[in-house]
Image 1 (cartoon, rainbow, N blue to C red):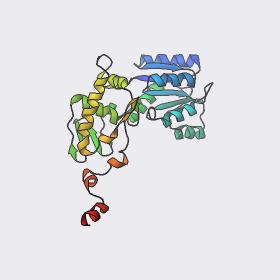
Image 2 (tube, rainbow, N blue to C red):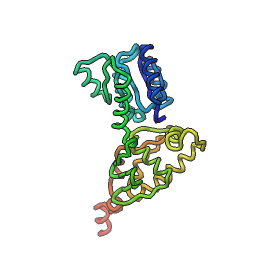
Image 3 (cartoon, rainbow, N blue to C red):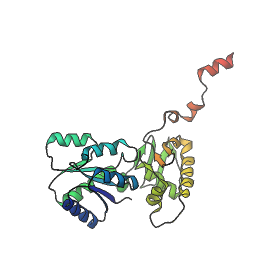
Image 4 (cartoon, rainbow, N blue to C red):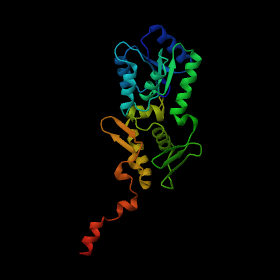
Length: 253
């Protein structure tokens, strides 16, 4: 869900205050008081952002942040660390662990919401209609133009939305159900296999420019858009078709 925020905070009063302010701002809130609860929630629903307390009863929040960053499905989820630690070394430790922002307690609801919006703008370029480019594939939402290897790529409306979503969420694995929610919307009822049809069309459109390999099938899970092309796909079609030196020797013989 695009507006879902996971709040991981063991103080019941602060957790309630955070949840109420986020809900009033239009966000859907998931709550956890421990890392175990947070992991269970993330396994079922991928949040748009995580608000993470540093000190938790079972596992330090910093360890959970590192875990989120190490897994492909959650690597790009923005994280704001909530903590009473205000030492420079602590901030550096948090940022080096992959945290996107660091908010010192106590803080006001207005500051929290401002930080959330700033991080989301930074981590989700599709919200600002920014041009996105990955491995030489360039998508311009404003002009609805896609260019790869110097060639224009024509896509239908759904394939365009799908590519835009994937390119602004690279490195994460999405199930068919999640893609239906993100691209078709919650109130549209279509079969999950419909996703496969549009994935196939998207791959066909990306094949002539050599970008088909960016869209990866994760068996038993769903689909992932790579941050870089596989090594074998980085060669141009011309280079891939050129015989190796040994072929020339054999032909000459």
